[in-house]
Length: 297
Image 1 (cartoon, helix red, strand yellow):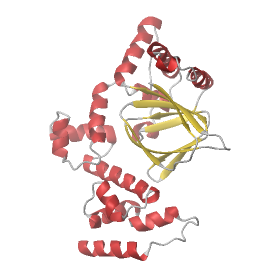
Image 2 (cartoon, one colour; image 1 turned 180 degrees about the vertical axis):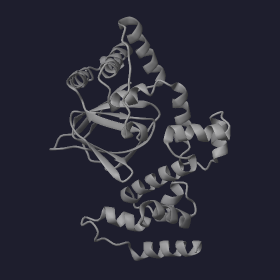
Image 3 (tube, helix red, strand yellow; image 1 turned 120 degrees about the horizontal axis):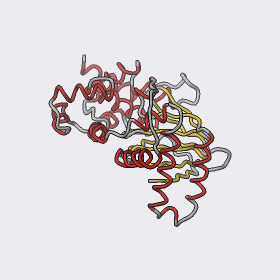
Image 4 (tube, rainbow, N blue to C red; image 1 turned 30 degrees about the horizontal axis):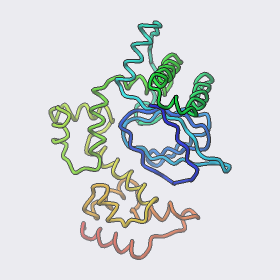
């Protein structure tokens, strides 16, 4: 439920796949969270929320010191149990009227921690140094309850809005099934059956959760992952296409260019160049893409 991560080396961009929700705090260093073409920068003292699914992150040590963060993982059942306890025992009435583009469209949000929350995480970090605490389920539950209280009783904000949206376990099950099949060759009809919904009901609920049709969302998620592989591995264009569920390389190149206005090879060289804009694709990659595009034409 509570984990401290310490990274002494800079390991570049990584994919983090979560099957539970998480709230974390940066103790030291810089954390980058990638969202499409944008990169959010989190530094010491920032609190963040990560939803279920894939996240592209980069943890950077600074000043010769390791990167450090504390993460609390929880399920809707955990959250519901704690909120009910706070309401019955302490009469905590919870409301939330906050809504913004971040909350609606992103599976992660972040902000500077307020004083009481910052002190809480610093205190938790001290507890985590004690081996007995890390194996004490009761102590972990108490700390989790304290965290939920500090957020739920705070003024409306992105972190609070995301936390309270996690109470619905049916929503978690739906989202988990969707995320579990991003890189699997499965039809929308089969996904609807897995969620015990008709095709019409599935499409309607999908749009409510993800703000776009299933087919478009899945393509976008796969293309986002392909971008990460292009700049973090030396795999070929065709290998990356296969890994991201685009077995037809020419189709993959066409979709990539439509989404990002450049071919995969051009994207790779632009982002790996030490001098932005100067690097060009190799002749081999140009030939590969040209050959594949001609197949389409």
